[in-house]
Length: 164
Ligand code: PNS
Image 1: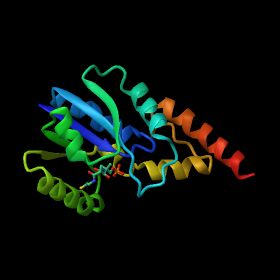
Image 2: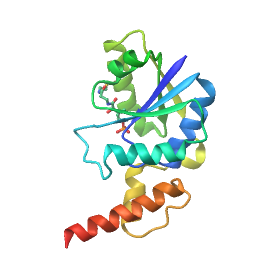
Image 3: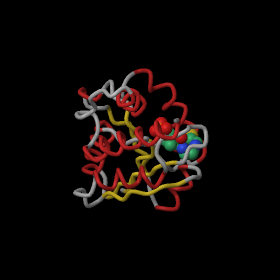
């Protein structure tokens, strides 16, 4: 069975990477898909997010990194995918994820959503917190892959230059 792991990945964290590695072991093929969510103002472009994920998963043979700007269920149909993989951290994620799972079920009853619990060490981790810590010069070394750490600090430097 093929699966899709969708998200904004702005940027990819070690929590995302942990879900990708575990899901890739459970499914024949995993599509990691960057969705261009118009409601969210992202720091990185879709191309930059794809590049960071691709670098981080280059050793996992059954993972494809892709992007989409449409409905997740349409992407899943196009790729012949049967399962949506989502990571769950705390109870606070549940309400939002539950609603999305039910909406996706309504749109495509043949698709299943599988929730994977985050590993304990990543329970508090989110892309937003990583960006906030980095923006104040804090250490994000154990929170994101090295390629993301370098790109994030470069991006924040670029942005601060833009503001002058
Ligand atoms: O990392 P995020 O921002 O929590 O991911 C949200 C994402 C990309 C999974 C969600 O916005 C999504 O599925 N977008 C695709 C468009 C879509 O199908 N929307 C209806 C969802 S019920």
